[in-house]
Length: 292
Image (tube, rainbow, N blue to C red; front, side, top):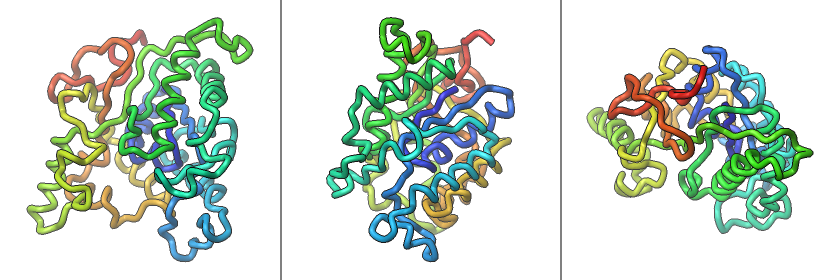
């Protein structure tokens, strides 16, 4: 399995339990992160001088956080696209960070795809996981990571494309991360029952939350609940970016293992495998239908 993500911490939030489950099952898991997350907001006061408007050393610090998170999940193969620091965090759309020369949003797409093709042809994954075309919620680096991942899957399979990067490899299945709207609604309702506000109030009606999708476009629910503790530890390793009183932990505290341990996907390339034990006839294994 190869996962392509924009910044350190994206992998744990979206796929931490999935990664830990497959590592435990003996599956090769590779993480390809596209930037160091230099533009992230620093949530630890004593480390605020790492931020881009001060010493601008956050990216290097987040390499250490990512390493600790991967150790918690058991992942030993984690890499940066083009090497650490090749592409810089672009910040949110329309911000000055978008204009920086090394911003991933401004990267030469052909060059970035070639870096990813080299990884695909080396690792030879059966399954690739990344974001949808909107990057989940419109972050430029997530959108660019989607473009790079999908471009790499296509070009890696073409033997005429850059044979110097290795033998052609055809990825069997590609999934995009997603969150079923019904699951998000259940979490918010659980919080409301306890008199707590929704952590997504600022985003308006739940039907408008950008990263939530209708249940009928979801195709897989991976049950990684036995590994929820590993995901929790990995999230806490990203201490500059995730706080235990933030929105994700607020939902986790009310739904427990269901939020921490079950992760959802949308199949966009390859054949759907047989339905498993997940609801709605969804796959319960991203390798469903593939040869062992």
